[in-house]
Image 1 (cartoon, rainbow, N blue to C red):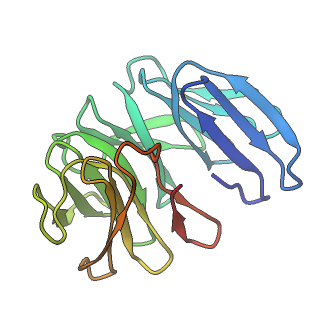
Image 2: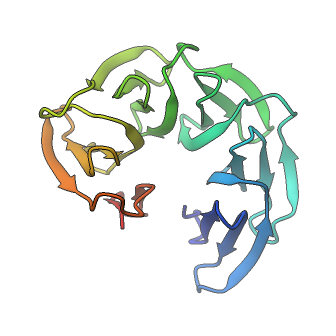
Length: 221
C-alpha cells in the first residue's frame, strides 16, 4: 500500500505487525496489532482492519491511533479498498461489503446486497467495485452505488471459471486479476471481462495476496 507522499505500508499477519516506511526507505514506525489482515491509506491516515472485526486509523507519521471503529461495527474484516472516497471493508462473516467514511470513521452501512456469499476480497476502480465471493466461486461487479453489473466466474475448471477466489485486484487497463489457490493460478480477465490468461502458481505456494503498485500494475510473488 503506497501513500500519496510515497510512504509504503506493509502488513504482517503472522507476526501481528503493521509497518510504514517513508519514500526514502527509512522506517517510520512498526506497531503490533492483533491479527491485522489489510491496510490502506485513506482520509489522511493508515486504516488497518483485523480478522476479529476491529479496525482503526493510524497517523502515517508515528502510528498513533487517530480513530477506531466501535466494537461490533464489523464482524470480521478480510480486505480493504477505496471507492468514491469511501473505505470499503470485505466483511466475510457478515456477508457484506461495508462502507466507512475515512475522514470521520463513521460506518455508513453495507454497499448493495448484505447477503454476499463469503466476500473475502474487494477492489475498485473509477467506475466499479469488484467483490470476490469464495462461497460462490465468483467475482461480482457492482457500480459505485452497489447495484450488480456482472458476475464473473462460477464454480468449475473451465475457461473463466473458478474454484476458490481468494483475492481480487484491478490494474490500470481495467484487467481483473483473481487469485485462486485451489486452482493454483491467477485468473486474468480483460476490461470486457473475457478470460485472457491463467497464470500458474506452484501448488501449495506462499502466494496469499495480489498487489497493485503505484503505476497500476498487479503482481504476485
